[in-house]
Image (cartoon, rainbow, N blue to C red; front, side, top):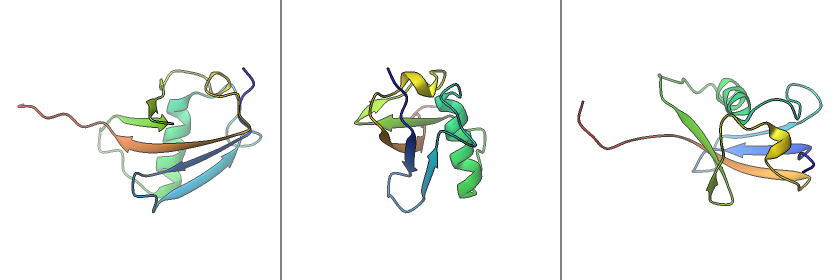
Length: 89
């Protein structure tokens, strides 16, 4: 696959949006997890020891996958959100 050259990331409400091209801060060799970390940093969102995930087209992306493996379209839109679980401590 050919990596996307632009990734648009947003929270589930679409209020916090960030767009990045894969020729500067991120490259096709970076991982989905690294892209999520950059999004959180740029949006001023504290991690608070939560695991964060990205979804594209309703499919959860593997945080360890390189961006070159994620899509063959030139532009990709992701929804970034924390993983939550319902359970007892």
